[in-house]
Length: 343
Image (cartoon, rainbow, N blue to C red; front, side, top):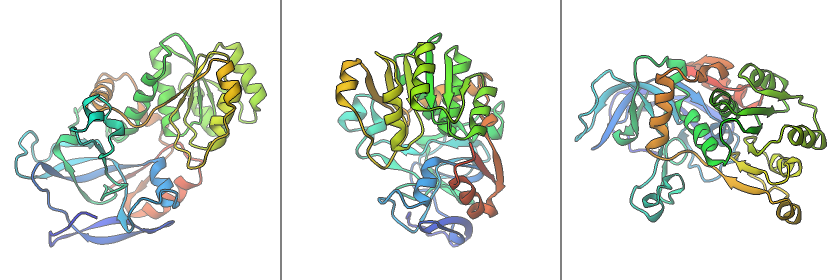
């Protein structure tokens, strides 16, 4: 955890061990050179937070203040920071590529081997205050509502995932798995003119996808019937957003000949792949993780500033920060599309 030296204290959500998260009094962190301190206002619970909470991310150093989706206001600036004003509303970009390695120079900072991951490998923002590099802090236009702004980070993930595919507006695509990323990708794609077929085993999530403009496939649909749906619709790209090993196998089994499968889910178990079938049918498997700094955040903020999308439509529950343990349990049951916290 970050070295905390300030004498005043704050409430913070500390993950002590898997499935045990406690609100504790912690020292308020001091911003160092090039950093800002943010007084947090809204937080989002991500699928990766749930994975850490359940003990599936063994590389996370515990105990740790987790959480990486959040907005708030600049409360203090470290040495060398002058482009913000005290009280300015900002959003956190929580992945910090080094900017110097070969992959960063190739514009692939999303897979930088030296990348710092806020709230996963170091102190995050499930707290009253958070310290973040100014370089990865973005000013928010007044036109963006708080409930939309807190979803900028997952919306940037969805945007990057959509751009990873070879599909273009007007094409028929399929989204498999309707968690926050799958639903946000669905909303973006529908607004951009893609023909979207959405599938999830939770009926409430497919109903929400339908409201966002997609054609929803019933939750009980088998892989064989799913293949028929996708074949008839001439689906060219499938986005696996479920994050469960059987989902990729299902996507490959049902994918039409010549289709591409974009893997955005983060399953922690291996998937079964029929190499002969994959090759014979000319299918392509692509991968997408997080986003590119700084372009994807810039694009996402611009889309929201222009009112192009409204990510808050996928929020299924809000909790006060004091109920963080209850909110984490609710997120872990898999029925919610998106839970946010507020101070």
